[in-house]
Length: 242
Length: 116
Image (cartoon, rainbow over all chains, first blue to last red; front, side, top):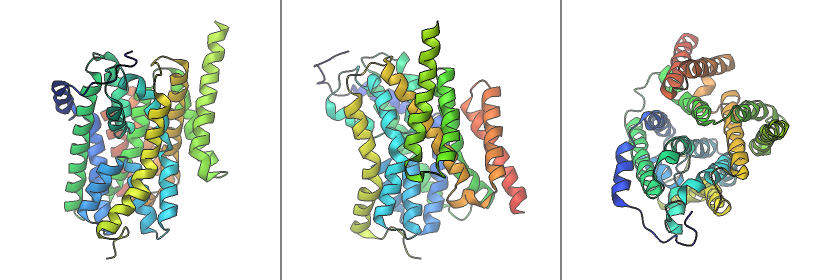
């Protein structure tokens, strides 16, 4: 750890390397989801620049979808903001879990916030898969390039979806919406480093559906703490037994 | 057609306020809380489990209470296609593309048949 020496700027060659690595299975899946949302956004009457602006400023497809759908339902700004905030809570534990990999290069603090801008399921899954094996000295620069590349690819796919909207048959359009949940669950299962993390996934799924009927506003946070907590406690218990 | 988020500079402000900010604030908190943590510390392990549970909960809610196009097909098809996708994922020894594509094929085929 380079405590106190966080004064570097990204290494350009490593940023380029990351950028070149961005076309991959994960960015393809994300691009297809964005393609589907592009078509959906046009059906709802959004402008093309608004689609691009939402992608760049928010960079979390579920947030964008929830915001758009809530606004289209006529619920108003406050309801939309709250709905987005409730769903985006997942980004906090994901950012915390990525931070140890973001700080090894000793980049200036502002670059940490720049990297955090890209935290989403895609970068979480890909980060945990790619970062540990990379040289700590250029790790963050590489990942910055990678994330920028994924953003450019997926946003372009969103624009393409917007432009060809209406030409997609209904079952395909439904499939493109299904892309996000299917990718989220497979990506998280791929990232799981132990059976306890898989247990957390299973518990989260059950709790997420059950708590929705009891405390819809806090169901995600509660499912996370309960599901994650039980899995962690079980791991600690089995560890202590040995 | 009326644009649900409005037009011009006003809509840009609305997007920043009600879409970007409520999302980013969690990331900023994550940076502040996560500083100085070690990758194999117990806290990080716990946080990873919490993240996994939240995302799975989110997926469950998207599948069970869908908004938009996904609501056009019945619940059994949405859940069934997810099971097919996960089966494909685990049978292919954790291949992401195989998992997502097998789930997709199941859902699209089912949707085609369901919608007639």
